[in-house]
Image (cartoon, rainbow, N blue to C red):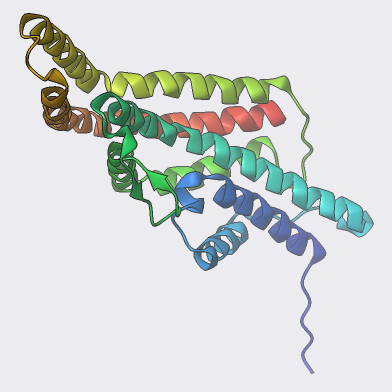
Length: 256
């Protein structure tokens, strides 16, 4: 009778690697909100087996240490996924600002991937950014970034709580919030000029109902200028893709 055995070091490494990939899959909004649960589980297991490396010293590894290693890698993955996913909020900020400025903020549509309600331009910008991300090879970049973090903090390594992690995350939020406003700036400038024009018209023709004229005028302006905003997405996404890998390595370096 043929016996089958698996080395404890390899099995432990697979568990740790699957835990880290699972954290990334759960923490990244790009993946967590758009892939079914079965697909996320299959992705985590397949990538985890790919990144798994044997863990030494498993003979003296107790159950609490094993559970601690699993949760440590899961936490690292969650932090990496959350930090990398923050860059996509740039486009959500740009779309939300345009919706509020144009008067479309009160209207919303159902996002079937999340089950929540989002505004029109927010949904449009989100889908456009996601499409460009896949066209430019974004998933390969995420996998490469995850592999780079294994060199900084190995699967059986230890982490330290460094304030630098919070600084990296806060700096990312600040930079991409400002970048979202910059992306929407052409349309915002056109809307501002429209508001000024309507204000002057209201002073010169007080008998005219500028409010009824202003709403469709702003809608026409924002729809015309949104094309200019969308044209800026490919170069912005190209720079974001390099930024994602830098953020993942910076977060891991702060933990290592």
